[in-house]
Amino acid sequence: NRNFVGRMGHAESEVYLASPAVAAASAVVGRIVHPEEVVS
Image (cartoon, rainbow, N blue to C red; front, side):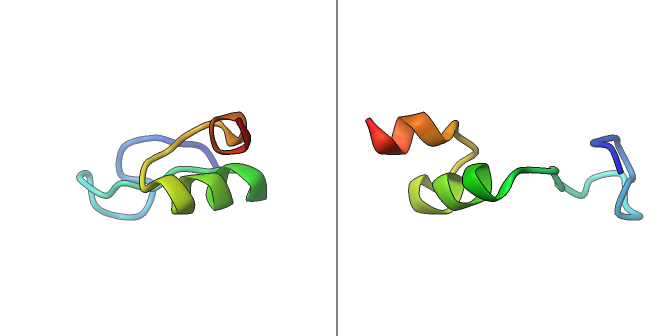
């Protein structure tokens, strides 16, 4: 349940745990951001 290399089976996979707010904000911006960056 943590962000560590190989968590999803392959050492080069890029998987990050995020809250629903961070996931939504990141989907809008196209990169991982804090939700306040989208609101402001």
